Length: 80
Image 1 (spheres, one colour):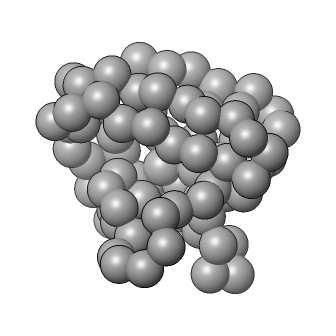
Image 2 (cartoon, rainbow, N blue to C red):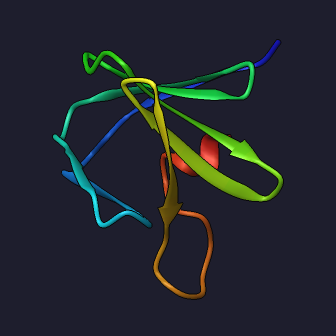
């Protein structure tokens, strides 16, 4: 079991394919454990990588995460 964690160093926006944009403030603690990414102190939100795509769960509903075209997977999803 590998646990990776970090702190967001800037405000972070996450866009979904359903036109939902989440904003996590600078200083939010992120933890990846057992293939699941969580955001502390935000409860009810987690992210996973499934079949090469990244999904985020917002209070029991799953959404596909969209990243800018090209380049690497951005932090904090790179922890997965």
